[in-house]
Image 1 (tube, rainbow, N blue to C red):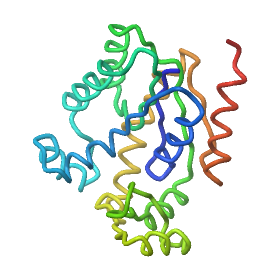
Image 2: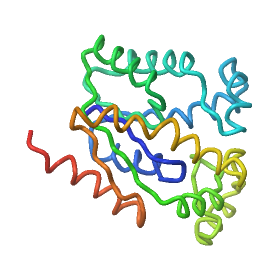
Image 3: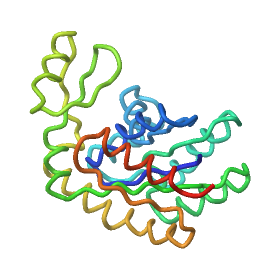
Image 4: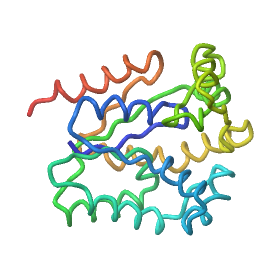
Amino acid sequence: MHLALFGPPGAGKSTQSKFLLKRWPIVSLSTGKMLREESAAGTELGLKVRDLLARGELVDDETMIATIRKWLENLPPDKGFLLDGFPRTIPQAEALDKILEELDRPLTGVVNLKLSVSEAVYRLGGRRICYGAGPEEIIHINDEEAVDRCLARGGLLVQRADDLPNVIVKRLNVYEGETEPLLAYYRPRNIVQTVDASGDPEVVAQRIVAGFEKKPA
């Protein structure tokens, strides 16, 4: 299984990645999380992308393609993959095709998570990251149980710079203008599965799995 996961900010791509990792023998790469970690660590790559992330802008193709190539080349041969956040542009998709052809690992599926603008704004505006108390956890500020759980274990609730209101609107516009055309790029291959991303995350995961497992081998 070689998958790419698409969806606007707030669609729950990271959450769905976790569910799918439990279901299939795949390894996931969240480019957004990776870049945020690099930024926090102050690495050469992190310093390069820090300002871009804060403004909700895309990292340049050359940097992203080199990062993805290195990750795919180091992937165990018995593992599939799930790319969360890549490709984001047509040039990135074309470069990915070339890399996967060289590695003889063609893309077998594209998951397209659909979410309304109003729901995306609600999710992102209230999203917080629980830091400093075990694994990073994404929660919503209105989820009192999750907030209490984070604070009880000594965590800190942090709002990402790209979840601020003015940046949210820009991120959604960037997605619409630069990422949506990717679906047109992949549709002729008959590998795109569009999934309603609203509602309970576990139900969304079931929709994804059902869409792939009902396909003929």
